[in-house]
Length: 288
Image 1 (tube, rainbow, N blue to C red):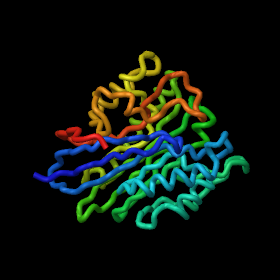
Image 2: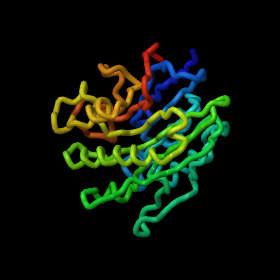
Image 3: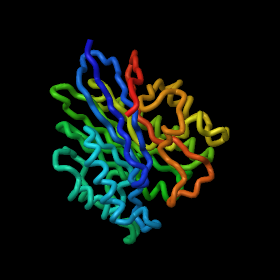
Image 4: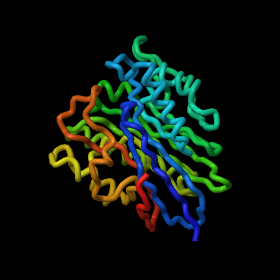
């Protein structure tokens, strides 16, 4: 019996991000016997100045933390900021492979300078075989911010010692109202439909990582905020949650009130790592 071992690492909250994971997970996946460590976080690299969140010093601290963690896979969201992408390019450890073009930028109304991949960037210490970016469809119900962000999902295939695995990095629609939840469900449907046309998805197991803006039902009691997204994602679509158990503790929150966030809630879990594969048996092994 062979195994794929996934380590989901802790990133210090002092760098002010979302996406803090610290469980060690073992998944019984036939034909795999490799170890993979993953970090996924929202870097808050907004395309405009926002308090100190877009301060270059914070960007350096963020990359320094990632370098220290030394994870095999890094999935970043909100790398819109041009300065953040420059810091990543010049300071991220040189043993990371990536097909994400950090130099690519686009102008919004000749004011905002943004990236070309919906704020997404994926890095791997294993060779990257292929990568595709798919932008989510936009309709009239989308907010101006979401239209400007041009979010989507980044689909990357890596070669782990001769075996292949897919990494899907995404950032779903933000917001607590019913329209936001509808948009997130539409985006999940778009992801599934698009994946059906990708040959690598049919050939290799896929890890889904990113900022899903989906609050865990153990944390949020407000029915409107909880909605049906969690049940839809885990029960209807059969995604296996890797980074925590069904019942989570406060230590597993990935977003908490801080200098940049004035939320009145004690904390939230918005960031996840999922596995989409039939007949997967998974078990939490240890705390990092």
